[in-house]
Length: 212
Length: 140
Image 1 (cartoon, rainbow over the protein chains, first blue to last red):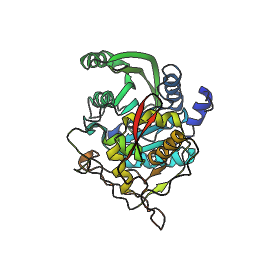
Image 2 (cartoon, each protein chain N blue to C red; image 1 turned 90 degrees about the horizontal axis):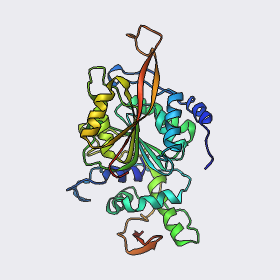
Image 3 (cartoon, each protein chain N blue to C red; image 1 turned 120 degrees about the vertical axis):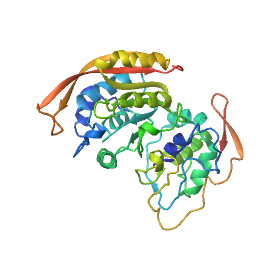
């Protein structure tokens, strides 16, 4: 498989269509192409957790991370999301990119059964941060992800919650490593946003499960 | 949805036997086949993790279209067939799960062609084949 350069990956991901009308209760913010490309490139090059692996993308939305994983040679990437509209955009993205190693499943991630343990090699996600009437949702996603992953979970969490995330990681007996601190540029996508865009500090974290 | 995804989602469910309400019930009204680049290493890695019973019944319920022509190498042939079943056969998605989970989902897929070919994977595994590092798996 042809080696994709970071710049090439990013410029491909700029072609990914995102939410037409984001839903505030689901905290639908697209992962920006630059951040997505950097995340995936690191997961692939530093940890080799994408190529020929089964990858799950929880709360995949329009599929930015899934599509990037597929481009980096995932054996199969499955995106999970509750929102049918987002998944329709995801599917049309797949057709535009002519990707065949991606599947999409509509379901509520927070109610995926506990029994899905170690089904995927790698879980990648940009979870809802749990700031809009859904407090703790990021931790629900993380717990599900850790159950599903055989090797590692890659996730984004607000830097301000790092201590809490670390506490949970200790509780669940998983190793947590902050790979990068990002300035997450949230463009004003909702009416209640007064500024054009706002930077929030976000940790890019790798959680490794007991087996790895 | 691909049969591989189906198989991953059915895995590790304690207390549920194939035929006794295995999580995904596939009702094959429509099946799509599209070609996917063959990746032998990936398919070989999947082998020990697949749920054969579930795969066989899933393959049977979608009434698989004909297999691609096998190459000379026997192992390669097996992997190629498996690749076809797992990754190239699929139905239209996405899927809606009752009780906001994927339990009891029905597979509403696209109607595949006009004629129906006899299932290639329908029969239970008969032959055990040795592959690589002493790995044994049933042959379709």
